[in-house]
Structures are given as structure tokens and as C-alpha cells.
Length: 108
Image (cartoon, rainbow, N blue to C red; front, side, top):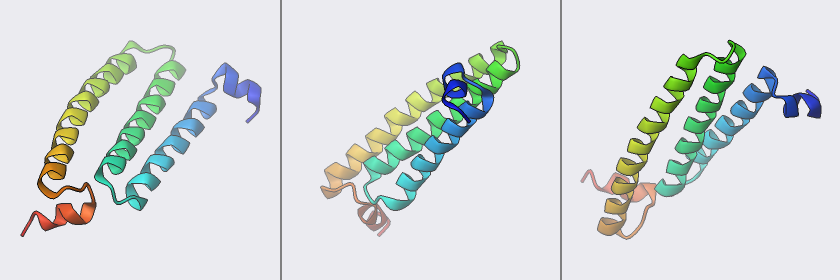
């Protein structure tokens, strides 16, 4: 894959960038203990899948259904962000930390 392909936007380049973003997000979720950082990793993974979706929609010839699905996913991600941040803030207020071990202590 050359620099020219990345600039022109071939399907393989979009998928490679999407895969890289997804792997970075997954590694953040698996390696970090802070719920806020894990939440950002999940958002990064969601954006990586959106990038792949738009790349395939462009590859199909600019299919409108891919763009509509992208907008729907962005709306769901906004709702997920609001609920997720509210839960993290509630956990921080209750325990004083956003560590995942503290979230496990709420079961008891």
C-alpha cells in the first residue's frame, strides 16, 4: 500500500486504517483499568466500524443506505455516550474512583 493509495482512498487503505483503530481501541479496553479510558476505547472501536461501513458504502458506488446507517449508528453512539458517562459519574460519586475493581465492589 503506497502513500498515493492512502491519499486517493482505496478500499484497502480505509479498511487498514479502520482495523488499526479497532485494534487500538480493543487494546485500550483490555489493558486499562479506568472505566473512563475503557469507555473511550469502546468509542474508538465504534468509530472504526463506522469508517469501515462508509468505506464499503463508497466502494459500492456511494450507496445511500450506508450513509443512513452511519447516521443511525452515530445517533446510537451519542445515546450510549450519555448513558455511559452518567454511569461513570455516578460510580465516581459513590466510590471516589473510576477503577474497574471498584465497580465490582458494587455487587456486594
